[in-house]
Image (cartoon, rainbow, N blue to C red; front, top):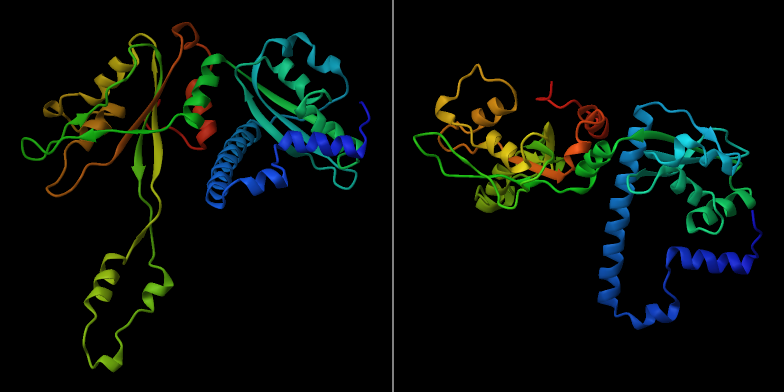
Length: 329
């Protein structure tokens, strides 16, 4: 690996992270600087969450770390044209346990080429690793990978990068039946789609709510606002969480056709004997007076039809989310 002076390394580090100079900071108004910091913090947090999710997948399949020894590791035939989830790890002279430095889904660039960038001192990714080894921050560098198909890569993209779309519903008709209102813009092409529902988790009231009491100095006069707040906040609701319950493969039909068949089933013919996702969605349309149906969400991604039959898509998504899909056999 090429040697760098302390001054050169400082310049490389400055370029790598894109830190603004003092002069640039002085020129940015305080409000704009604050917004920029908040935006960058949000983006960084999102990147960390995605990487943590990828690490969780790698750990769940119990892959072994491989020691990086030479460039020939990455020119081998079985790495040259594969798509994969991969991780870069390291240990130190003081602690042999291997820790993650980075993890990524290589879904656009072949794994061999992507790994070479992490061990090339002329690339930003490789420069970081080279410097830490040279400075004895790290002892050895390792890598691990799990080969994936194009459809599995798109499935992971569906989970980590595609936002949920809420499904609206009509007002009750015919007594206690509502109809789903699918959004426009669903592609007339093959692909993958997921259906989920909103789960609200209740938790006990906060301790400060229990300490509220009437002021004895008011001789029994009731603070109506305080009582109203106590009544409405007896149970605090956690932020909503959307639970995946079904992964669909639109291979024979289009995404639009598949979702239409799920959500436009005739609720008049609903039977308690129905099972699976259609039974769940139809039963959710039958509500008691004054009660709203469970909130339902969808997400989808287009995938070429030729790729959809490859891979183990349901198991791939279940590993990524960490729980089984309720309505996939």
